[in-house]
Image 1 (cartoon, rainbow, N blue to C red):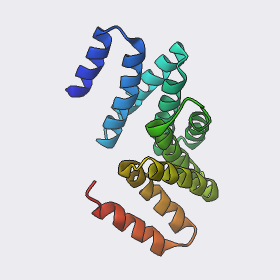
Image 2: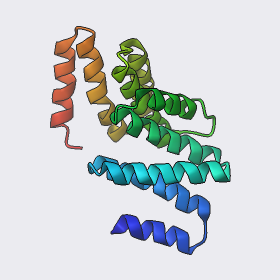
Image 3: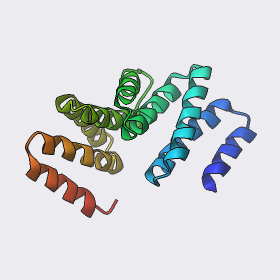
Length: 169
């Protein structure tokens, strides 16, 4: 209900960029609640609107979010392309960049490119540390655990998963 209200409010003030960016940000709420179809629809709308408006920051965010969603759905090549575009967008920062790294790490794992996945995860973890974002840090733990496991470091993987499952976030 609050998600629809946020979009309606943005539409009411007739700010297309606010409406577009709101859709992108709300897609993460849907994603984290397991509502994949809603997440994809909102992120696709957000990306299309951002590109129409040629707003660099909003494009970076939307591409980062779409990178994660495409990667999680098994569309690893598309996920990697969107993540790379988001990561190299000079206007992207913070949350949009963190989600891009998450999507890139996931895409690379799906392609069994674990070294590239590790590099993306490391960049995301460094960003999370520099911004003191526990949420961003926690999001990257499962994909980092997969990378450790695939590289023969199953004990490290188990410790990361245990940390993620016991953290109060």
